[in-house]
Amino acid sequence: MKLALDACVLFPTVMREVLLAVAGQGLFTPVWSDRILGEWQRAASRYGAEAEGEALAAIARAQDLFPNARVKPQPGLENRLHLPDENDIHVLATAIAGHADAIVTLNAKDFPRGLLQAEGLARRDPDGLLWELWSHHPEQVEAALEQVRATASRLSGEEKALKPLLKRAKLTRLARALGAEQ
Image 1 (tube, rainbow, N blue to C red):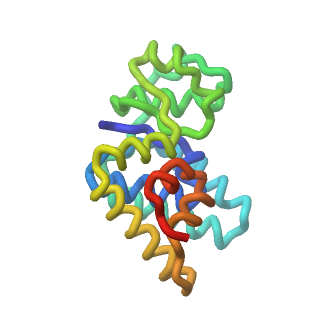
Image 2: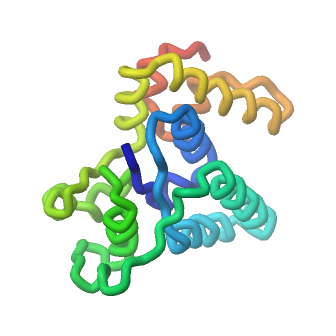
């Protein structure tokens, strides 16, 4: 399954790391464009030069991990597309050009299901998607989550519990389903 990742699920960090770790387990193939990655970088830059530098490093790492994720724009494709927010048309164009099955986003109102279905796409929220993947592939998702938790612990210098980490990342359904300890 191919999934176009909107910038809003690539930044914040924990949500992105969970999604990419699950993709690294082979449960889906991510798709993005240079413009989506640029939006991620600009969102991080609002928090200062250090955050922007971290985003640039994370973008480079993501591109190294998923070298086939980058989709080049198709000439003229965006001109025939319509969404409530015209600034999101490039995400839809990326999904179409990348032959994605769905767009993973937190912005449901900007990606109406009917418009996406007309293009053969679905809209998925990250929490519901990850819960579904966990339901079918618990070992692989739990391995990805442990990887993210361990990295967060190492980077912070203190042991991080999984459930609060997921809740802060707005992955509450997944956190409840796992029954992760506080």
